Image (cartoon, rainbow, N blue to C red; front, side):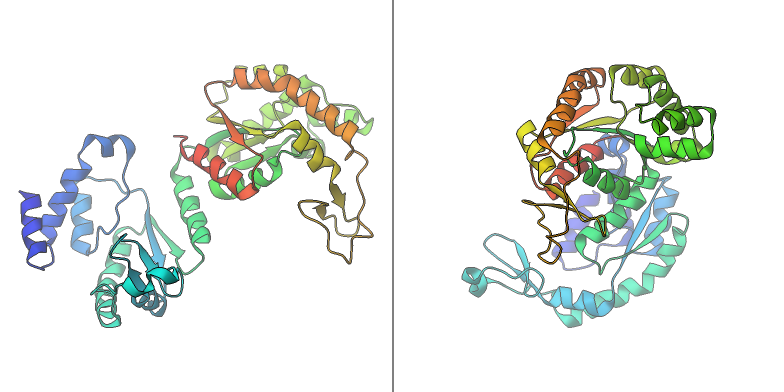
Amino acid sequence: DVGRKADECMKAGKLVPDEVVISAVQERLSQDDVMKNGFLLDGFPRTPEQAKALSEMGIKVDLFVLLNVPDEVLIERVVGRRLDPVTRKIYHVKFNPPPEDIMDRLEIRSDDSEEKAVVRLNVYHRNINSIKNHYKLQFVGVDGSQPVNDVWTKVKGAISVLRKPLGIIISGPPASGKGTQCENIKEGYGVIHLSTGDMLRAAAKAGTEVGKIAEEIMAKGGLVPDDVMIKIITERLNQDDIKKKGFLLDGFPRTAAQAEALIDMGIEIDICLFLEVPDEELVERVVGRRLDPDTGAIYHMKYKPPPAEIAGRVVQRKDDNEETAKTRIEKYRKVESYLKSAFGDVAQEIEGNIPPAEVWKLTDAALAECK
């Protein structure tokens, strides 16, 4: 009945009345897939009455994201749109120009005029403040005039606050690109990055009992034993910021004993990411690295050559040689299979021998599946 009424209004070229739209939304929100997976409402509510009706249905809204874009930018976006009637694909004469061979067949949709855009914007502005006030506790404003990727980063950050804090492990051999992906994960999901090196230094600086032990060992150039490392990790994972925001473990666990201890702690791990890169590629990445001693910047002779003006001063770090690289990779491979087995239910292999942006797409998709 609701669908029939809506169809009649649309065929007559009329706006569908609020009560019909509200009924249609209510029917959809009560279906099993929405109850199980949640929902993303786009284009509703458009009026204060619709917002009020949604609350009266007992529908809980966790987040209200408002994309703020100046009217002149919106009008430019609308009037520049073009439709390909053959493929139904939308282009824009400035932001997404069509190929030259289809230019002649493109159409301007009847609604994509400046006059109609202004009318629609006026209706929007009459209603939006009341809707914002209705959702003032759930409201997040985002600058929608930014590049698309920047807008998405802000929106995803707002969504991540609503999620259960994630427990993430990232594992990979030397030069697999973990550092780049850790930065992306931190920014995209708001988790706290826990690298073993940083935690050891923080524990030593804090002067805790276990920190003093670690500091003494490191001062002598020794490796911190598993039992000390496990105690430091345990202390850190029990702190309030971790419980609130979740964590990204980087460099732990490195051994079977560390993995067993993490499982025995009862720490919930949502996903364990393994960056997959062939050994010969890893060696090439390591031996090609160069350090600028003046700025600390890292370059690569093949993938990121230093500018000509500083090429004479860059140096190769003593550990960035083929022999050391192979030793470190071999050490990682010995524990890798055990880690994959230990975290089998949540283990996720990520192709790492592709451009970093493509690695991030795969990583982001894997993390997005975590509930």
